[in-house]
Image (cartoon, rainbow, N blue to C red; front, top):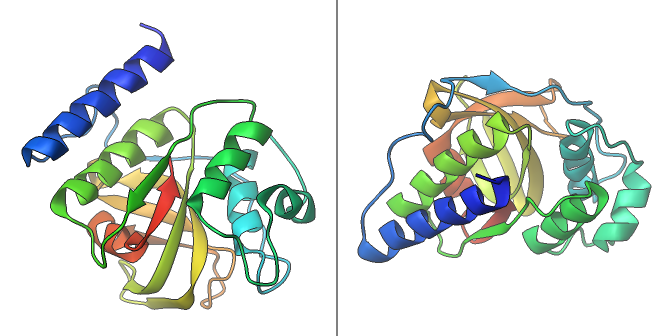
Length: 201
């Protein structure tokens, strides 16, 4: 079955479950329990380039290398930042020469269980196919080491891996205050961190 058809069927199944109030708790059939992609990390070049930096890291996992400044121009990034996940989706598809990415919104102030399960599903499905996820977050969230990460004005991160069948994600963070540039986070916490914004998957 072609990838496009398979992806449409997956999205249709998720939509039916969400509409009916049911939840998806299993990883995609045949998925591994953990996977981390190879990517090229870069710190963001200035305080408003988190969107370009996160998008760039996702593209490097696909063998596409561009400067942060070039990506910023394509995203429409200004000193106010990058507008929304819709922009990262558009640029990931355009510069990655693909139609794989879609924008997923978590519109409430916190994620519903269905939205949490959708993120877990997307993480496993996308990472298994070597497509990192770019997420737009706002506020504070704690990683698996107990360290807090706070972006009151919003921030973009790249999900580059998962463990625990997708219930824990590895994040590449171009502005990590701890200086590592990456950390792990529970997927439920990640979904709540994305709430009121969206992600490209």
